[in-house]
Image 1 (spheres, protein in one colour):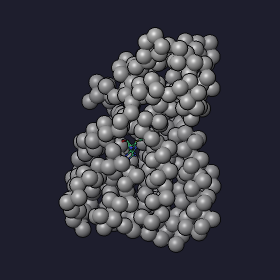
Image 2: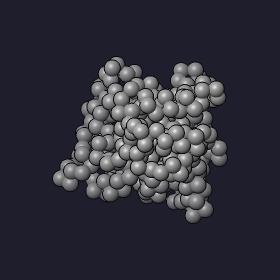
Image 3: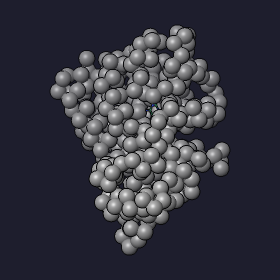
Image 4: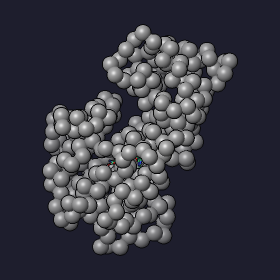
Length: 311
Ligand SMILES: C[S@@+](CC[C@H](N)C(=O)[O-])C[C@H]1O[C@@H](n2cnc3c(N)ncnc32)[C@H](O)[C@@H]1O
């Protein structure tokens, strides 16, 4: 099934050229390569691109889709690797929280634009064996990178009831308390270790409560994914590194899919404005166009914030 999963349709697809002002020679840093839609848009507009991704499989897929450009692929841990000065496309396999140190090591600086498109790709969510989807029945893993030590099943086993409530509330789950209570009770009999077990518990609790068209387990699965992959912590570590990587008038863009993440981005931009480092290009986040929503409902909760470096 994995190879049959359609290419990820990135939010704001086809709009980056205008939003960033891509032109020949523009130096673009795509911190979340995924299936390569944004990177491809930049390459095809004549940009030179440095792309990061933590997931080896994402790198394989993106290079399979982008056939007209051959990347130099580097492991971010490889201290001996070299990047030629005239590169067109470099992919660095690394957590984006290492971006400053890695760019310094390879003398990469003065980017005209940076994009961070948070969250997992459709491929990751729907891939078999990774434990992200309530539509599959498999172990509750959810790690984007196997070097992470803690799986979603581990969290359900070790967090106490109150901590589970706190965790599920991260994704604004309104039934965080009853869900945590049932998990704490059930695991005394059988550990909750599969996507189906968890999805069934949630569906039973929410049987008669509808939340529009979203699956009842969406928010709990999202909260677990965020915790397993330290998503909030990663954003907090990443944002302060980015202004130094931009040239004057360079543009920083962050796409988030959750109000808590968008708040982190907003607060960071506000603070950088106060310090005279960045200036927000849009006061309110840009939401996907009606045209985009007609093609992909997945992007309905996307929010894009753009800011310009002013010093
Ligand atoms: C929403 S997808 C990006 C989609 C992409 N813009 C496209 O056009 O297909 C997010 C990607 O970021 C990667 N990612 C998530 N957290 C990361 C991190 N901390 N460091 C590097 N990559 C990360 C994921 O592996 C995933 O491939």
